[in-house]
Length: 270
Image (cartoon, rainbow, N blue to C red; front, side, top):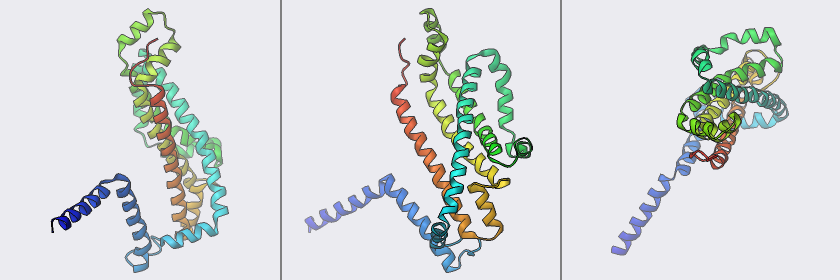
């Protein structure tokens, strides 16, 4: 009897440990979502016009895969260029504003106020300047991610201990050396947070711009199929957007781990 009890306890303990595994819980949640996606329209819980079954969504995506692939390529190209503007430009300006006191006290409050404005209201201005082609999507997406990257970088630079800067300056360090060996390592957590948020906001900006006025792209395809009540195609487009956003988040995580190993939290000695 005791052996059976011990065996039963071991089995329960194994199940408990398995259920506590984060990967198992994530997969279980994903499985429940996919099951609901398939069952709810089939059982009439949700109208198929509002939610197409998972199987119908997959079939529509496979059938029109060439169309989706071409438009995904357009979106990816626009997003890559927009990320250069958002992350590169936002990081450079944030580093400048955070490290130069007169600029920080003058311009940083203005940048914070602009970030609070819903930028989608100015998208018609972008279309007036650059048309409804790729250019307006790149500019709008880049602007959407520019401000969170700028503000996060500036906030990270402001946390740098002034004593390190004074010590580096007394040892004859150049401005570039102080930025590389002191500012960037100390501000790295904030900068990576800005990269993560800025990347997500840039992707949102590009897709939203494509949905509002475009001739190609996943956002354009979603809007086009929505107006034609092709629900399955709409959800497959949404699925591709989710995959694209997940890929970006994974890439940022890889960069964050590598950057953390290259620039440890302790400031390097000059």
